[in-house]
Length: 254
Image (cartoon, rainbow, N blue to C red; front, side, top):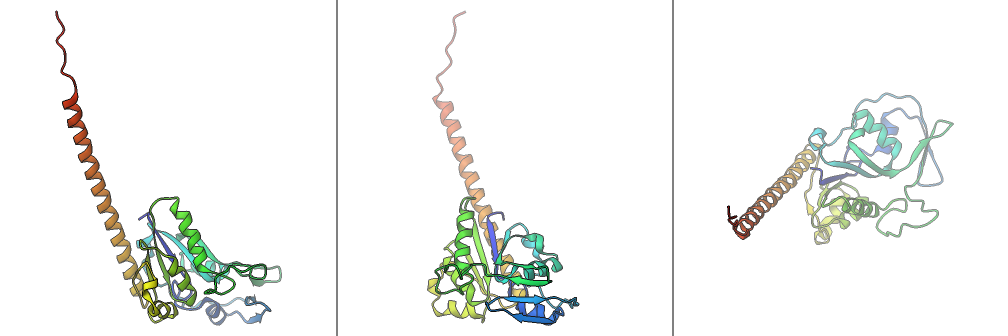
């Protein structure tokens, strides 16, 4: 399964909520300061986690053989905090999201992934701070150097539509049914080159994802077996042909 890269959105995909709202509502953060930009400054207090964030894929051990990445318009602090709490952080090789840090005053500072105050990323489909399509293109370029790898992309929101359009015929798309990305895809599904497999909740996400991974693995095993069989046959042919082509041994006079 080393030839499979699974790319997850985070909010309403890995967790079944919007992390910004969930953190404020459920973890006891008591002060929300709206900054002048689309990003936020939070002053933290100690709260209790009631565990109501739900990881969509229940048996992530079943997909640990794949490379797992995140592309999200949430933020690094929330994503890493939630993943560590769920015991999942080490499964992901890469997290692409809006950076954030806690400053000396205890405020969480969140900045845009793409600094739109300096320049535009040039994509009219996406919000000014992040084009997930460009991130997917970078991932595609990086894995192309490593051989023939397939991408499975999972998402739910409007921002997941642009990367969906960048997937190839060899890839797989898992949009969350009846969510914004699903509605956009349904307007003209012919624009999507990847094979589409929808899901509605965590249980179905798990089942569909494991089915796709299993199907890809089976195809890879079959291809490897056919290649081995073909190579073995060629080696036998070469061996037989070479034997027949050898000159007969000359008898040496005694």
